[in-house]
Length: 98
Image 1 (cartoon, rainbow, N blue to C red):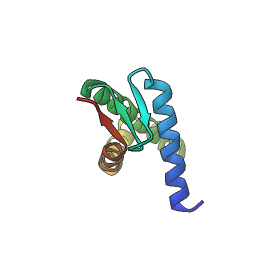
Image 2 (image 1 turned 135 degrees about the horizontal axis):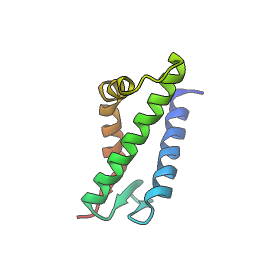
Image 3 (image 1 turned 90 degrees about the horizontal axis):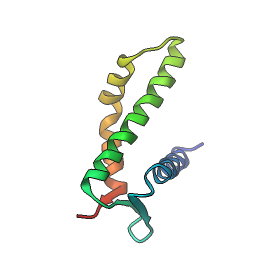
C-alpha cells in the first residue's frame, strides 16, 4: 500500500471512530472538510481522548513486538516521536465553534 493510501485510510478510520464516540458534540462539515466541535472544552476533551487512544495502540503494538508489556516506556516513546504529528493532524482536520 502506498503511503498516500495508508494516510487516507488512517484519516478516514480516525474520523469514523471519533464521530462514533463524540457525535453528540461534533459533526463533519463537508464544506471545510473538518470535524467541528460545539466548544473549545469539548474539542480539548476529544483531543485528549483521541491522543490517549493512539498512545494505547502504540503501547500495544510495541509491547507485542517486544513480547512483553513495555508500560509507560512506550507512552514516552509515543510522546517524543508522534505527538507533534498528531497535533498537526488535529489542527488540520478539526475546528470548534466559539
